[in-house]
Length: 316
Ligand SMILES: [Zn+2]
Image (cartoon, rainbow, N blue to C red; front, side, top):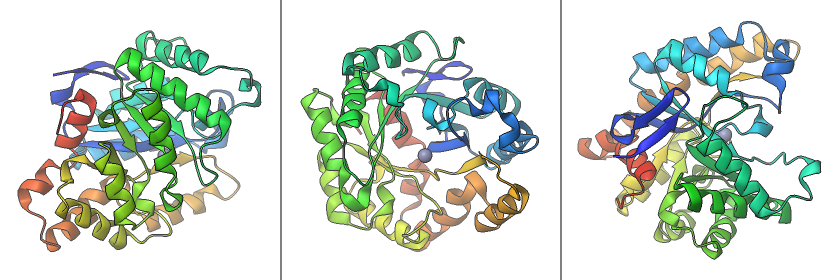
């Protein structure tokens, strides 16, 4: 029983239900939804709401929106979408890869302070509070700037108890570097989720991360590079090794992108690529896992038990 910040206020962890741990209602750049909404294509709010209503009708109760300020986070869009669809939405604080050049002089403690304020007081002048904190590194490993953000994330986590979600580059085993920094900061890695872990099929690497105690975001579906069925075989292997409750499937699916010319055709192509939207995991992956022999009891817990325990910080 833990109070979780959603964009419409606190929700008890036992009420999260079926939870997708890494999605985006929209992805753009800082300030775009507010200053240049026309760049998101027509009726972007209605498109978001329609997709969420479809997800809700398909049994999705809660979505973690992993959109940071540099990805065009707009918590008022999230709040309206949550009100109109009935889906709980958990907003994040922290930073992705587009760290502003003017942040060069900021210390880890300054980052921690802004993240704590977004968790305890609110975001963008609202009383909407963040429920998760994000840091990011990619193919280049943890850069010095990213390390400062990551240390700020660690300190904000230690002060607030809000868990940590990490954009990572699993083909380059970048998660090992990220966990090392968090360990130096004294973070209990059971409060950490390593995202995009299904961009690799390297079960030995993923097992090593799990042995350190963290959760894995198997959050790219259908994804690119590694095929969806290979992603699912990797998930199955980790389940067989006994880690089912620390695997957090999701899609990293973006409903609304910046709309270049011809965006309607691009949107149609995306819909053809994934006609299920936020229901891809339920409609496509769950039946595969069943065919692979995963027990009904294990499948019932996926996306329900793990997310709840991750937010509560209880041992799973
Ligand atoms: Zn994402």
